[in-house]
Image 1 (spheres, rainbow, N blue to C red):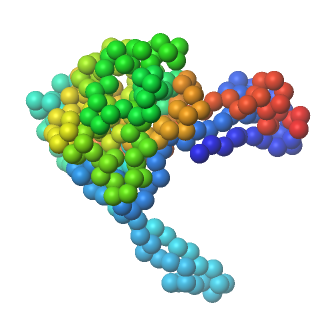
Image 2: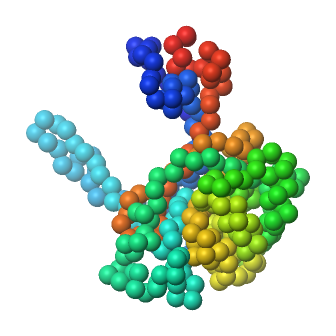
Image 3: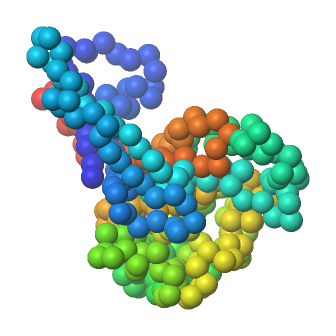
Length: 300
């Protein structure tokens, strides 16, 4: 999914904000989020997505003939494309920074580690397209993406990971998201490719702000093991304070070889929650931006 931002010729004043000037030149938006729908694949550890219409058109009609419909949603905060807050994982009873996990959640929420504490992100994004770098279409089930794989991808793309970046690791597994039955994407029996503990330490060592992937749990899941062991979550969330984004749609951005971009993400301000659904965006200049031919430059 993509779109191009533009303005009408009626607004031709020069913007004082350099960022606005870039937007007016033309910005292409690549949507990295998954569509939410009833029955979509998800981790069995979280409440499923459910959508219903408590009120439909015609249930109530105003005297002027108007009517309105509304919705009710029920879902876990770790369903679909979502971000993990630091409250999501503890180890040996401790959250990030050594906070006592039980005490931090007294009252049924996490005031210090909840998803509301994640500031909206507008950062450099880097896509590490691992299977392409390895000469494959998709990583094998249960394959652990190694540090050597990450570094080889980084070199091939000429996109060095820098402190503060948001790094998205593509395994190719996202192409199974809409597979019939959804068992392939969840991958309990087959395993799911992803980084392991070593890869997570590599990301943390590079000083990344957040890390994401196109799979259900970000990290490698061993065949038959499900979510029984998640060392990358421990390293990133508990030890390093790095946020994790899961179930991304990275197929289009990889197909177009967009490896470096402006990454935009804003969690819902769910006070004290352990995660939030998100709709991440990758922004790049529209074709022709800066050369006088981009949409919105006022020259046709």
